[in-house]
Amino acid sequence: MLKFNVIRNNNGDITHIETALTGYDLLASPKLNKGCAFTREERAIFALDALLPYDVETLDEQVSRMYTQYSEFSNDIAKNIYLNVLHDYNETLFFKLVSQHLEEMLPIIYTPTVGQAVERFSLDLRKPRGLYLSYKDRDQMDRILEHSLPNETDIIVVTDGEAVLGIGDQGIGGIKICQAKMMVYTLCAGMNPHRIFPIQLDVGTNNSRLLTDPMYLGWRHERIRGQAYDDFIDQFVVTTKKKLPHVYLHWEDFGRDNARRILTRYRHQICTLNGDMQSTGVVALACLLAGCIASATPLTEHRIVIFGAGTAGIGIAEQIVAAMQRQGLSQQEAIARLWLLDKQGLLMNNQTGLTSFQMAFSRQQQELQNWHVDDKNAIGLLDVVNHVKPTLLIGCSTIGGAFSEDVVKTMAAQVEKPIIMPLSNPTMKAEAKPEDLVTWTHGNAIIATGSPFPEVEFSGRKIRIAQSNNAYAFPGIGLGAIASKARILSDGMLWAATEALMRSSPVQSDKTASLLPRLAQAVSVSRQVAYAVIKQARDEGLAQIDKKIDLNQLINFISWEPRYYPYRKKERKL
Image (cartoon, rainbow, N blue to C red; front, side):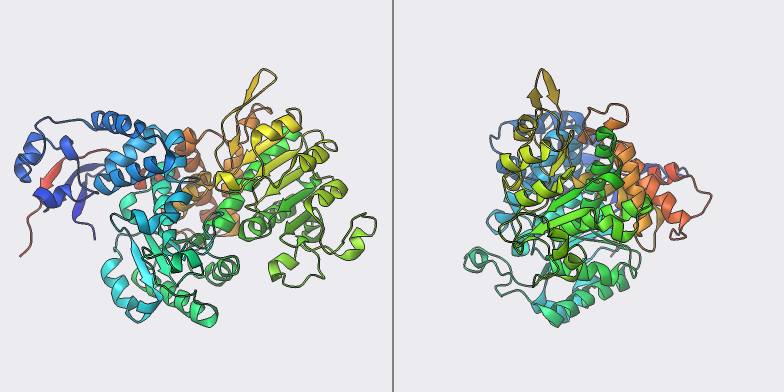
């Protein structure tokens, strides 16, 4: 629970912080600690004299010191650990440091490095953060949430750790994803970090390595399935909503079937987002729409192949179909322009084991009568590219190198400006490297990746590679939902977010530019996304705010920035 009060003036500006904590208790509070930036007066009032070195620093001086320390680490996971330790020690300093070096540090605290941190969670645990709700403790959930979930929570980021990035079932290590998402909400949208809370639902793990690892800290049990799992999720949602009626629930890294079922069940009951399906889809679609500008080909004329028909792939496909419908195609006409492949090859309606949402994108055998392939029940990527002649190729397969030279050259031979988007994370799971894509297409490829990659030099020019990072989407969407007090997150609000992100693309003024702005611009982009989301929520009657309120002022009011405020003593109640 928060141990301080934020005091504002009549204009809503913060004037000072009140807290009753003193001495080591104050220094041990990461939300309040200022380290050597405590003033002489504050050191006297809060019994900090001699607990700190004599010199009084500014926040900027502290940032300079921390960056020097950070730069001494030679590998990414060590840098990740360092930044997380700083976050555990002084949140304001952490956010100030990372915000000043966002392009450099976001890949360290978020994708792709967070994947390594997830795998090492039980080994590297230093200070627990958030809640770990175990299935074994389900009878105590009311009590746990009542006493441990802060009343001042706006956003909950929750996972069960079954499908983390491209590395699969990581059990309770998934909490690191939730913690990283929290950081991104603050860094990229100015959300108050004190009002975002991570929760791990520990329903077991099917990862044999974890089950036999003596250091694993989660419940050593195979994953709960079926009705027992659904009941546990429902208990969590109902109990959370009872305590926090207006909370925004962000689901992350759930297994494919569970993710879909949970979103379908609750999206019209509470304000909720599935990051893998919806925010990933928003950014991918914004990249695609920007690619339409760069390639001078309307969306409705593209032939789209998606390699990987799991949670992310289907989510992207559904948003593409919805966008095509908005541009005049029927649903059937839009679906006909998409070809999806999964482990069994091209999705076919006669295949067994397809989910209902995969079946919606499956092809009929009579469509392939003129295809010359060895096995029409297991059609691979190269065969699809050869026959479909796609203008757009998207990868959500987590199969590193799947976009081979043969596949890419076959595509490029049939399309003047192919749009190629290897979106799988982490980096080693990417379907292709941008350098290869540029070389194989003679510099004609329009590229967006899921992981960060450096610029590519080709024919005397430097090509900046857009990272289709959902950090461009979910922070602004969340900011808009919280600011508008939206009852639900509608498809219209997601489309508004997509359009806002697309409008921020550099290709609007230069068709040879990157599809997305630099990450350093994430805050301004998120504000544009939030503005569009709030406006759409208000237009649909989903917002619970005054219709006359100035939306920019509203965003400003709830935004947080990393800075130190004066402290005043709050007397403890006996």
